[in-house]
Amino acid sequence: MIDRTVPIATGSVPVQAAKRNAYFVSDSTGITAETVGNALLANFPGIGFGRHTIPFVDTVEGARSVVREIDRAGAEGGPPIVFTTVKAADVRSVIAGANAVIIDLLAGHLVELEEALGTSASAQLGQFHGVGDVEKYFARMRAVEYAIEHDDGQSRRALDLADVVLIAPSRCGKTPTTMYLALQYGLLVANYPLTDDDHPAEGLPRSVAQYADRCFGLTTTPLRLSQVRHERRPNSRYASLEQCTLELRRAEDLYRRNHVPFLNSSTKSVEEMSAVIMQTMHLRA
Image (cartoon, rainbow, N blue to C red; front, side, top):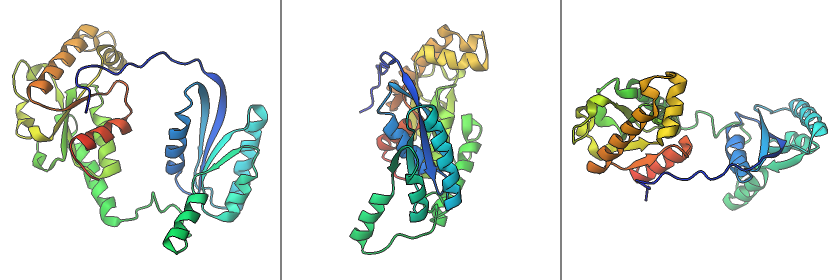
């Protein structure tokens, strides 16, 4: 269940050790190497990492150039950590010769899958992040267009088609979460800003009230919201701690009165928030 009342404590910030270089090397966009590699690195918060993504390494010569860069970095510090998602054996072989810790995210698993499925993996590069399923690709593009049209309550058109409607005070993370759900999962997501005009009404704002079963709320901490708003409008009432505290209290009261599930965004990434929203709203990509 979502914690509806108590912000998650961040705890003390660990003292960072000397920085290590981490490379994400791919024969395609590098997104998979980054995603899995960063998920692994996140387990070592006491170490600072200098991250370098090198995509489209699909030739032996390109791999040699990458190895030279990695070796130079290794000569200036500890051996770099290299996460690779390269399928071609000759290119992988070159990268494996780098003076670094090589973590191949594909090789062993591809062999296991080939044995399990009784067939060889395709030699085509970049299939995971290519167009792939054309219908799914265009569904994601339509979802992005929908998100843009319905950002910050700009449009009420076709709100009945929305998979979820995010509601929250300004600068609580509505837009990035909306875009992530659209681009990553092809979900139709609208978002609506809660303003002073929406209070002190007991119910949800008129624009979204009839879609209450699709609404999901976001909140944050007053201090965090004030900091974010100061970057946009320094020293304004909009960014004051008093105003932020008032808006968040009103929003959370509104969520509770109307049985709208909500999430504190102050300590969560957009990926984490999206996963919680999908699970809570029983959405499937």
